[in-house]
Length: 65
Image 1 (cartoon, rainbow, N blue to C red):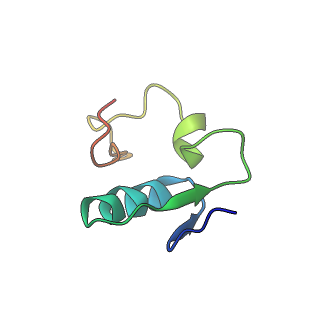
Image 2: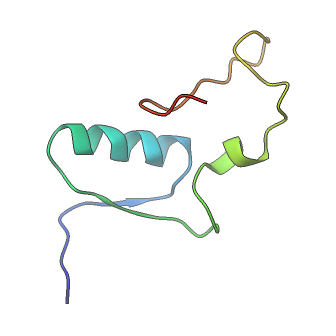
């Protein structure tokens, strides 16, 4: 059996960002999500939603588009 100290529930924008910063501070989080892949709403956004538009969609820290 494997143990972990930190579990992040949800691999959407907030969960991935949290996991990124947890790793930067020395933790090894496990990220769990019900969807088949990470990214939450980012996976379903239109390609036209970029920083140049009024929608203000930002990349995740450490993961440029």
